[in-house]
Image (cartoon, rainbow, N blue to C red):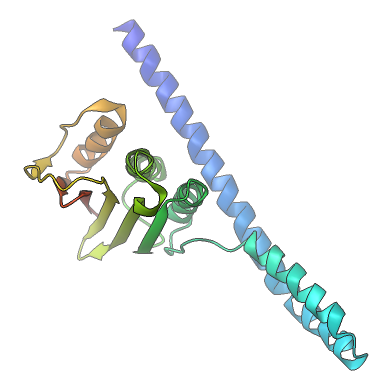
Length: 214
């Protein structure tokens, strides 16, 4: 029992540290974006001066510099919720580095009933599992689809990743079942909020659907 509580405390501390990391990352990202917008007029004036002097080569160089700068602050996806943005963009950027094609669409409220920590755990584990599965496939077959939105009073999330097989498995619905630490953490959160979770494997893809009351 003592060992179990010690492990739980360490996991909680790690998750809190992870949450802060994501939050700091998105704050930095937003700060850079605000700074870029603030400097927009100055950039235009600089290029006008180059154009007036006929320095078109300098304009090309300046545009390349701006394009590179903007690439470093542009987000992969904007949901409307700062913490969701932090988690999703961090994970989806990692997926891109691993050469996994990601198709994501999300629109959720600024405020949610789900705590920021639980949201972090849920999305992180779902994407980690999906990326792990994709890394067993050739680059051209790696695909993750993510969709999030509000359906009435529920936060709806569906994540699908390619598996490279066409085997169909029985659909399962749970409020706490699962295998492995990642799956058990996901199931625990769904159960905590009285939500619903469905997993299915069919036609070379694995999908997880989550409904959480808000």
